[in-house]
Length: 169
Image (tube, rainbow, N blue to C red; front, side, top):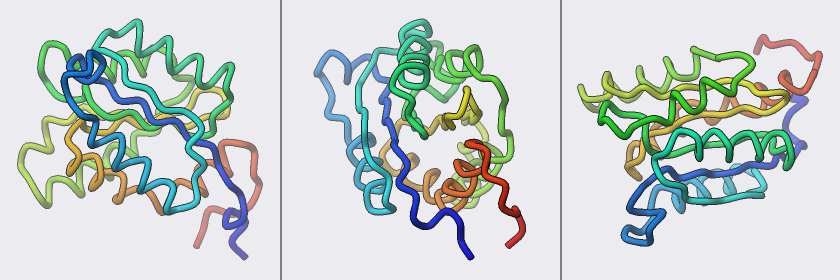
């Protein structure tokens, strides 16, 4: 029996974009992720756009985990190699545990589509009982990366929250 199929998990989507935070760019990746996650039964409980500032990103993630107690936080943007791309650093400093397999799966799937996927520094991990996953900033890459791991997320969240069901299957 699938022990995760009836649970509704809360989700926050955090877009990291200097231009988006100033209203100079429409956040198509955040909107795409809202649609994608809602369609899979996640409750979108938080959404924001913040600039590419490490402290601002970390502060938002901590607030969403520690105070809002969101089950899943998906970030989009700031995962590349540009000087302002600091999302992985902001995420890493607040995590209790990393889950490298999620990032590896996303990069592996992306490499089937573009050689540039090797430049992604996306990170995934746990803070308290919340799962945080960094996605690229482009709408297409964010959608494809989430698609590559989405089926595993309900079980991951179940286990993070202390579920004792088997992982096999």
